[in-house]
Image (cartoon, rainbow, N blue to C red):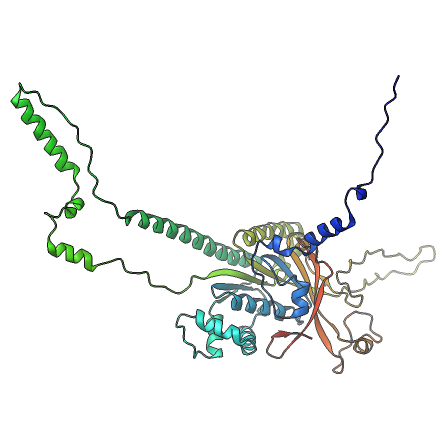
Length: 435
């Protein structure tokens, strides 16, 4: 009896070479153009930050976690300015719940960006309605600022209503575009030149024996022919059309459509801040507030994907406080109670940065990218003086210590950029620049 031999086991790595595996990994992690579908990203003009973000921010929900009074809001306002300057048809909607968004700050950032980029100024001058080349930088900045709408709200209900207004505007624009396309197709069909079409006549051979029947048949045929010819086709016949009518028809040709101002579309949204509007709801009913936030973020994520919208959510981050043990009366037999508290997981790759973002139980699940914006010492000597004898992670406020802004990618859905970071400095007018 022949005994069958089992196949020899083979390792998967023997079927695929190391070069092929590396190529697959590079295509997943570095093939951004395939995932983007050719869509342009919003870049900031800061080399290290743009590299950390893969060339810039793409459409979706992005959380900007930062300490109050830090560089996080300036980062978001620079993204707003970049979105408006890159696309002349883009508009921005700002939902302000805390009153931190300053219009003059946005204006100064736009003016500063235009002063350092001559090509951008020429592009904006050509895209304006007037098209004049002598338009000043301040006037161009004011034109760009006109495309920013700020909505001041005071609670979470106001945030949802403001987002609903943006959604209604996008849906209305989509319906208008669809109706315009339908009208254009209809006009093309109506204005298509066609010659006079005659209905087929029924040929009847009359009987020679009945003259009365012949007269009736010919009368019916003439009636049919006259009723089938519309009034519009009478002008085609040379013997009916008058010279005046021909001259009037020839003197009114189809006029070319005059180019109007470009239609705008909401491409950017900034919410500052979501936790501030939701704090009262979280204190009253935590489970219900969590359900509201979950539903809102799900709808916002769907909105950004449907209409190619970039939504930034300002989220405060703070250093957690050490727990204070409760006061207990001394007892001989009882042992001191030990407090076991799990410290929050660090989100920064820097050991000295101990900031913990708020809404950590819901927000990271629904955002496409999570950023942490903080200030850190620039060099080793700066860090030595900043953290000497300080264990809170904030650093000692010393005028001699040079600090720089850091943008860290703490979470990313599509490209695996977690851990990437870039450094920047903020000028007095709010513009971000290279270190």
